[in-house]
Image (tube, rainbow, N blue to C red):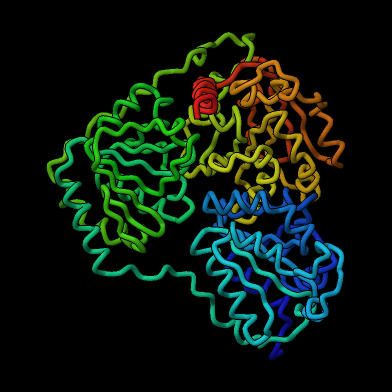
Length: 565
């Protein structure tokens, strides 16, 4: 075989970079393309319930494996996915969005086709996506098509952003040289400017040498841009106290003796707040300083000695080293660290007092949020993938100590309610591909679940086995805490959650309802329950306005800001 179709070429390339599952929905402009997926051994089409959920699923997959692919049809399909695409662009998640577009012949004739706006403009949806994509490509010349596909895959992986690729429906069967597949796509980072990199390293080492009370803060982009290993080495070599913001959960091994906790500005524990804010040097790795990630921008560093390591620049105090990427810089910086920290005396790690209510031991006591998130640590295992939905879960998880190699998934910046209901599908596919024994654990509110509940069908269809913990507190608690605690618009229709698995066709499953501390302990300490042997729905009954202390405080801050700005 000297040639293959362009459609198969795309899927062969995706497989080469580690993608085994593709998300999306069929539509008449992509159907011939989807035929080609089944020609590539080891590839599978997930078959999502709708395009929005498919985009969330692709996000969950990428956050575990580093890259994902979403395929939609022109117009109606691609627009339905854009909320998820925007979130991935904002949060540095590598998703390639492939869109099957009308044939070049139809476009040339300006035909009044379905899925268009009826004005002959076939580029309008592409232009919409260009605002929330790292790069876009529209294939129109077969001679350039393979280069465009390779470039899109490279940009998706290297930039860890969304990339848009439009392919006309008549191009999928065109033949291209199979020999191109013998040359892998170059996924390496471009080299830093040596002079700028050397200058940045020199300044950083000088700041480290002079520091007496330094800290390290590792955020989400430490995970997204693959510098977790370098961050760990930085902590090991310096012995500086290390912290994460909420979005950075999982970026640092929380079992590390120098891990100090979660820093969220004024919402932090007093001990963590004091340690971080009194530092004379802050090494910040991969920061995304959004409002919910900073306690409504309540960071109050006393020092101006701040080094920010980013994927495309390094900022030191007020100076910017544009184009200097953190990964290669850290790799050159690390061997020089031991000499720079000679004489440094490690400061104590802040203590972690129990949250109010977390000390309760009465098995008949009603389960409450502070207790739940504190004691969840006892159930988690090394390697778990933990998804927490916007709301009580995303805030509560900050009180949970992760075992080593735990992946935390929470859409803290974009904050689209229902996100994890789709993301759990992608994370479950990715976990199965990496290690079938690896557990995927979802925590989602009863309100959030109603936005994306259809994806339980996809989980059942593929015999995936996540834990689905539904926090039933009768409505949108996060919204109630911000405004309208008794407003009708914050209420929802109650569902029979323990009938959902059966509804979506599950044959082998478990249902559990937990409302007391004793019931939680009995369930989570059960050896059979601790193994991901089947899909499980666990409904956790909670008081209506009960919430983690951090969310209650955040709700007050947000309400104040909304009222004054």
